[in-house]
Image (cartoon, protein in one colour):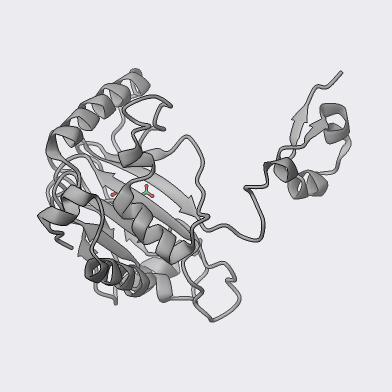
Length: 264
Ligand SMILES: O=C(O)CCC(=O)C(=O)O
């Protein structure tokens, strides 16, 4: 979607565009808001990201798709990233005001010479045994740090694939076989674009045939279910490590949000 100068200035979609963005997210499984972030801001973020990526990959020479966790400092904690106003507007309408996320957030880098990824979805359906499509409950927000082109590996996506319920989440072979019969498209977009994607939507990273890395930030947001997890007291109760260690694996799994700690 192309937004107006006024929307860019106000950091808000107008009502018509908000309705269109929500429709695209619901019906296609993703929406791209083109070049919504200021280009000087993106340049600064891009160079901070490149510096960090070099630091984190100082030894390994990556050749595939793989990103870094964003450090908990500026500019990575800029509200334009962690609560991007356009993404928030869409996500809050789609998933309610109480969406939540967690740190650190991630990123996706396609390294020069990387190949093609398996077609995959980042999450399955909430009730995979049911044939119904529930509303979105998990979304990823991508912020493109460079222009995304066919040459540098713009992600391939399968519009409306988040509505397919008859394949298991991790059944790679069936997904590939089915996807071949379905139309796909690429996230060709200028730097500073913001993508909001339903994480059930099928996609894959594509080859980067240029000499420059192709990166985007990736922030995951969850719909709040029931009263959790904003009731921190419920979740963050400390359980003595000794007690934790005596619990069978299934009990540990059920109580995984407790914090096992040495409390002697
Ligand atoms: O980098 C991309 O274009 C997509 C990466 C991706 O989907 C993943 O790693 O799960």
